[in-house]
Length: 397
Image (cartoon, rainbow, N blue to C red):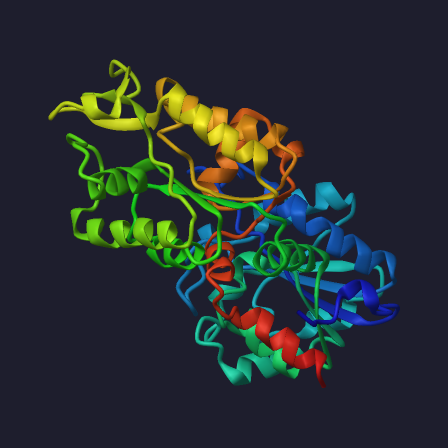
């Protein structure tokens, strides 16, 4: 994968436009509840400032209506937190497309935050006129927002076509390096753990990985559908009966290539979806008609742990059970600890996966933690990410 890296450029005296991913969760009062994405964006900004660039940063936040700004859409809380992390003032510029007077005050070694880019008319449709105007603001465009790389929008794709120079920031470059290693040159055995509530949302990646991995571990509601595909009774567990045939096809395809989809042999069940429901560990053949499977049992965890211990590369997306409830967190916790202690290179992505990593405190032991959700999955599926493709094209010019 060939693209220009920000670290390869001389940014002294240049106007640098950074598309970051500052889309952080907030509570009902607008307070930031997790600043991980802001902290992850700091290195690119600091590097550009240190190089003597005049820096402008923008991001989306939430799902605003284009052309109809509301106070809840504002990046004001992000500007405040960014100023704390950078230990400098970070002015927030509103209406920055129509009123461009802010540019005259932007000097080298200074940074401004441009208000929520998805409020701009034409952003989501990758409007060419908007992209060209934004490109005129800068000498160097930097995409450091992997989480939006699968979307062709004006600040992720269009601007990269028209800016004098377009490059990848340190966060985006690190993501592409790590994911490229998994996709193109993984150390074997390659083990993928794909879990979550529904097969339908991850069917494509399951099918893609079934052609590439040595072992495919499924969990959560996905595992229930796979169990049903093997004729197991799953009671009232979350599953997708319409996709049982697809699950069986994936199992058969893996077997035909000498690979495997190890399914749970013991599970933790309850009678209702509640933190206080009684949790029972039983054999998978003992699931009753009114049981709901919420986790894998210790015997299954031993099998998974042994697979992870021998893996050369591990891709992890999704918890094995309802880990938010302590009674059903055991399977995911044991998996997390197995990955943390294993010798293989591990890469993890997806919101629930990151929450599990944080809950069980293994962040420092994971080889690479992806900040992308949809982009992470689409890259592993082998899909073309528009924001990455345009950087590759610009590297050729």
